[in-house]
Image (cartoon, rainbow, N blue to C red; front, top):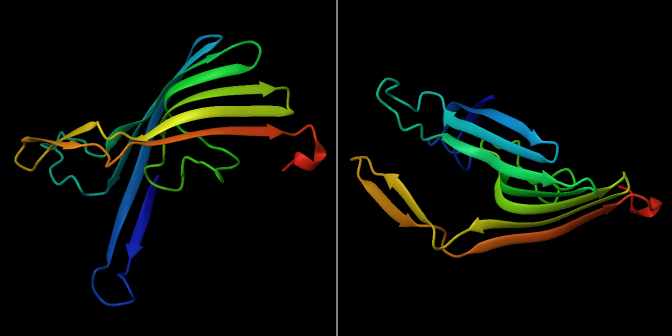
Length: 173
């Protein structure tokens, strides 16, 4: 998904502008292990064209990352439990969305319990970890040495309950 970016600078002043081509490429796999068990895995590469100056010697693949990796178990009565890194989209992404228009998109490390009954009831109960203060981030500096930094400044969590009932006419979208 290539995209031309053009930015002319701030406040309509000369200088500070740029133009570039960015892209996002995703490759995914969904495997139905059993009738009630599904595994999803998706990697993505987000980068600007030409940012790897040495295509023969640059093995870092800085823009390559796991976008989604989840496991879902379903029961015959309509209950499903999904655990892992996953996109969460509610009400056409008006409440929470995967931000598909952005190059990198959004996936959350989450647990989601879903229930659907016919076409008239759908519910989702979820918990996602947005930031972990105790997490460590390891990256290489330009000299190749490992640099360890803390995770986010504080813990951040997101939890929610979403219910859609379409059996009542005044509740239909």
